[in-house]
Length: 292
DNA sequence: AAGCTAAGCAACCGCGAAAAG
DNA sequence: GCTTTTCGCGGTTGCTTAGCT
Image 1 (cartoon, rainbow, N blue to C red):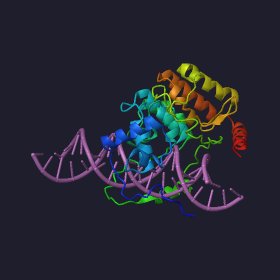
Image 2: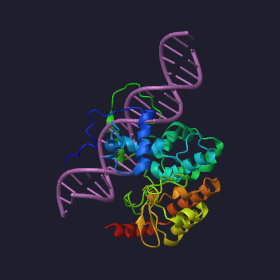
Image 3: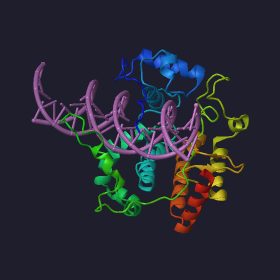
């Protein structure tokens, strides 16, 4: 069955955003919160596709975006998270406060991919074990500079499901899928710093959450993983039995940027992913049972 | 200084999944 | 339970800029 286009595409602006468009979008979202991307451009007075608005907001305009200068610690974490999760940019980004999936993806494709191909002795020792366990995932097209122009579109993409038998098997992670939680109820605040007007939907976190220190929050989340043993990649089954997606909880909002914590977080992930298979299977079926 | 190439990054596209009707 | 709509993700493209000859 056909799929309706996300927008008419007729008469819509494309390409780089102007400061005026940025201002309109920011103003609208500050007043009304995120979500309803389809209708947002019209309401905000923008001649843009809703997807474009969302992307612009998520990757550039959000107040908590941290731009530029990936630190060595972040760099290291990205490499190691990638070795565990593969090209799950949004998951990796969710663990790096202020970083976006697009930024991390670009960073990987331009810097780290090369680095992985020509590892220094230090890198080699640091990551060798993980690299053995998970196949090197090429960036979609590497650092190719296709000056041949023209859109080849998704022909390669269609092959991604592993028709190439020569490829080594990927590390499979059998964990429950996150479920989508409506932004209206659990907005993606990302925000220890990102607070709109008090009536904004973006300020949905409870007072308790707001008062809780980042460290407390982090350790709580860590204990959620430990106690409940229920994390997808990586949704959490919270004690009061609300199944939510961690990316909606935005635990990264609560993670302090100190790098000891990033290291701790990595170790937790690594531990989860190295649990034996029966645990994965149980977790998977448990998660699925919740989702049916 | 001009032309060329590579690198970096913002933005677009299509698809899958979940929500809504 | 089926269809349609909406959202979010990952892959890809193409513009801009830096570096080199």
